[in-house]
Length: 383
Length: 134
Image (cartoon, each protein chain N blue to C red):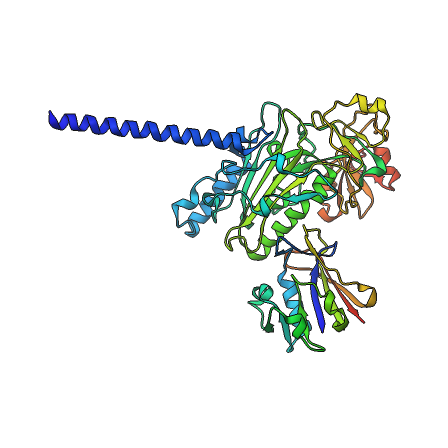
């Protein structure tokens, strides 16, 4: 009887401890969630999913390969990364855009927790939220998950806020928006993954994010080390267009000696006013009528920025809302241009398969535009 | 002194106290340039040459100490104050854009481009080597 009593007491104590522990942990979690992204974003509400087939397959393949090689030596290496639970980033701390595409946050120290570090590659993407917006994308980038094939077509994805316009000479390449990879293609090889593509200005893509992707990719190729890498799109309220992205990177094996950064990249476009609520836009100095067509959640006009130097795929929207400074072509389609032969093709043309990637230019626009650029239609697919 | 530097396409050298990029092929090229001479550099750059047979002279004030005709590899230090002593410059251009908060600020107008060549790197599709002389 005495023994039963003692057992019951022990069980009661254990139960109390467990309840108390859960309660503390839940409180901590809630605190983290409320503190993390202040004022805006939905990112703290998101949970990371393995990317449908690609990411989970890759993750599994990598894990299997490493197990076979005997490289997984510590069970701690297999645990899942934390998401933004350690993150204390606040959009309120970000200075207004002043002509530089990115700004250091937290003294350039990423917000990763010690538990995030692993020598096992992984990539994880958030499910879209109820507004169709992307959330945090997180990876431990190693050579084993970097792409081995050329980039494919991503035009099938329509990210939130995708209201593209052609601004002609105001923007290199003409079109305002790119489908911006959160985890750059050169890092994880994701093509048309809707969980990894946001609507970003060409300026965000080329001046803000690409330099960091380049730096990380080169480092991994040269050292065969891993880089813990996280990109968080920052949406204010129910805006469909991200205000910017938080990019964090830290090299694992050398403990940040090679790579370490924490920056915020602005989703702005010099000379263009953006309505972050909808993705609509108009040129600075556009008529009042044009401005009235767009709602009021706009960015501040910005100073002139350097001209982007490279040419990612422009991806137009065929509609032409009022205030568009350049008339958008009425009939657009995706084409592949061969910059060597100066022929253009439909993407599914058999000639495209044998085309060298270095000769390919992905183009979305009208047939007339391409012909005006001196290209001839392919005789096989007759675009 | 003969200066050797690596720059991105906008003259960037470092970001957050770290080099923007690296390439094994560049180290090999530097070995070909330096040959049996010694290469001055500071402690930050030393590890880049761990696998190289180049004879290194490591000193955090190497720019001040290097003599005429001696090779200096600079990553995180500005050579501007010693511009008068720089006879020749080898610039390896990555032909890519990286983040930068420390850039090359030596005015090349005082130098003449005497040679230019391109080669494929280990992780860079095309690296351009430019050689300038006073």
